[in-house]
Length: 388
Image (cartoon, rainbow, N blue to C red):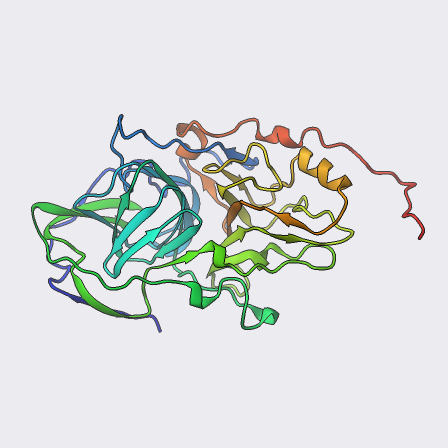
């Protein structure tokens, strides 16, 4: 059972009526442009300069892709946030779903009705449906957001792994209660995301007036360094699901609306194996981002603050350099992804890319396909393994 109680100085019902406001690049319109089944990659998304324009977390939201519908409570949306200014006398509430926030550049201080959370790059946080929050930034700031409708994030079932492994419950942190009893004579703005649109209302007091709370429906954060990595120690590959941090389950057993998967530093020891990710097509959509470092399958071109999308049944895999290097490498124990943290939002939905993602952002790497163009045919029907 999910529940929580908030003990407020004034109830949140005391506000003026909500009125529509500009949504900017935030959208749920999946039919604005034609579908694109190609492999897509974006260069690092621009962060506006504070000397040129002030952009806070809300006005810095840009929808890249998604599918489904918040009205029917079934779907997923992926956003970028790029901002340079803190939210002042303003908070945000998502009535549609949960936000999983992945900071990439710049720490963010999130004030919620439950308390405050400082979230740094290499950490994540989840703000669940309906929770009001405000974001303070300390310079040019960028990150990724996975939004799900109709389900909440939870730990994956561990199956034969047993009691310990992957993201352990003890490492998730929730805020300590904090409140302010503050009147705002000039007006406090509450921004509400409802059915994919933005609305705002005014009230004359801070919404962060919760003196105490209890329950199990809370915002929380997690440090990705605490992930207990499991990997193959003999030969071949385990399924990437062994890197799942959180999942939002669908109504179909074994099928997720979305998984949050990471590729952290780890040991590679598999024998008789091409160790990087193999070439494949997938029944899932794979949106990847890079927090820091160099992703082992594509060390050039895929940069921190950028992204890629490999849609359902679109082939993808290591670039030419990675293939050639690892096809002839001496297989010995080695550290993989040292100083790197790549992640994936994986979904069973066939996601559409927005007009902003394909055009307006001007960061789509149209030469991405070229990273596979030089792959050669190495097949030799006469080859035989050497005798020992």
